[in-house]
Length: 125
Image (cartoon, rainbow, N blue to C red; front, side, top):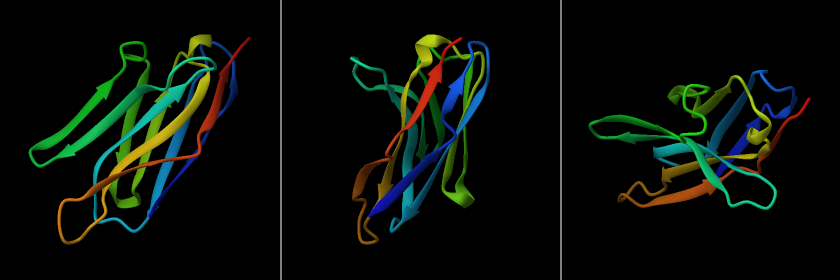
């Protein structure tokens, strides 16, 4: 099993910045991808940003709504993922979930998806 623990949510005003952190722990043998998703009240969960660690390189994707404002980074040594959110807007208000897809078998390329419990981000004046 893999545990993902998020931290860093809170209440901020429009235009403020906030950073989220996610640390993975448990039994896994490599990381295929990690990312942040969010879910606002009454809406479906959506991708915010993710990074795929492929054999030929690392690929990062951002939702159009956050491009230029949010920055994804990771520290492989700490199995951690970070999301720096700048110029926050009220529409960024949501529960933010960390997601990870990890290799869970040392014998083959089996991968499994895991989710954190979520952290609330509220942007309001």
